[in-house]
Length: 229
Image 1 (tube, rainbow, N blue to C red):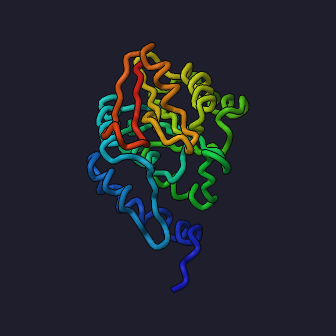
Image 2 (cartoon, rainbow, N blue to C red):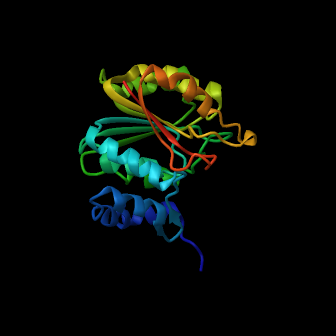
Image 3 (cartoon, helix red, strand yellow):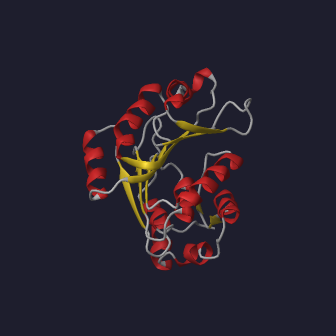
């Protein structure tokens, strides 16, 4: 059987196939189950998270009920979808993703339609396919804030030491007092992965009130670190 063109399917359905499923999702556990299992024709939503860890993060975020979220690293769209579930009903969610290359998601154009269909009524998603380290990207994002501040910043893009450091320095100043910043992949990774988020995390976490969410200290990947501003 020949697979249908994703763009055609999305346009013909006008998002109904996804919206009809999403509106039944009323709690975090259902949302988690959805992103780990959802498939429709040749559509899927991917998430590179330890289920226990992302669940704990969502439980914390639910109490914050963020109105403005910035995600650095869209990848397969899994965390983007989950953030729409715990965000304010009128939240603005911006996700920045490097179009390709190392630590770039490089998602295809048709997935823009898929990701934008994640919103609840009243929410807005803006996708920036750009380098988060580029000052032009920073300026573009800052313009979308319209003099507001970020409630929650999720850093999951460039995993090199200098990369995560630059994302933090550039965007943390836009997070309001009382807001939160979370880093993914704070657990120590095998040497060949070039993931050094743990080094930046360990050097800086004690400057803030912080929380580490790591299911197993021997897992050698993932791990979420939260700092409170």
